[in-house]
Length: 165
Image (cartoon, rainbow, N blue to C red; front, side, top):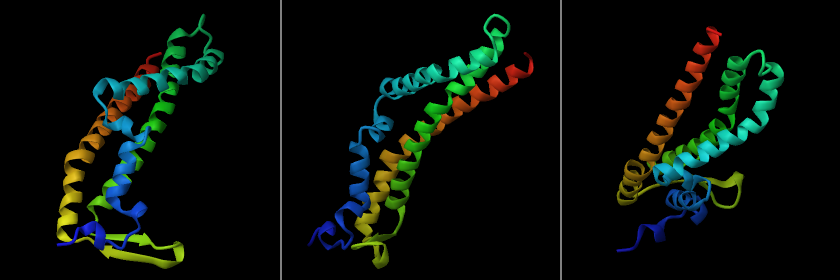
């Protein structure tokens, strides 16, 4: 019996399993797969780096001597932008690969945009791909969703706190 990868007409770089492997090995996207400490550390680094830009802007808008609470709340909210953008890029990459793995029919291009083709995955390939989605990609997406919830909670509490300042 031949291996499914040998009969697959999809170019290697467009095969969903290879796209998954490439994403998993990428330094940026691997960030979503590491342990909790390794996952949180880049978020905190990005958040801290954001303060370099946001802090002076907030200090000009809300002088520390006159409006310390407004300075802190606006800085916290502004500093969330950079980590949220990084998390958005991370999420979009994983969602793309998840969707390609889940699809029964794969669209691919042999040599350019003008010659698109489709290939229907055999049952064993589809089953393998869906197992990868279930056991490897979905946990990453759940973690990202929880992280969005934390940032959302932080932003909502900052907005509520702002109303009382």
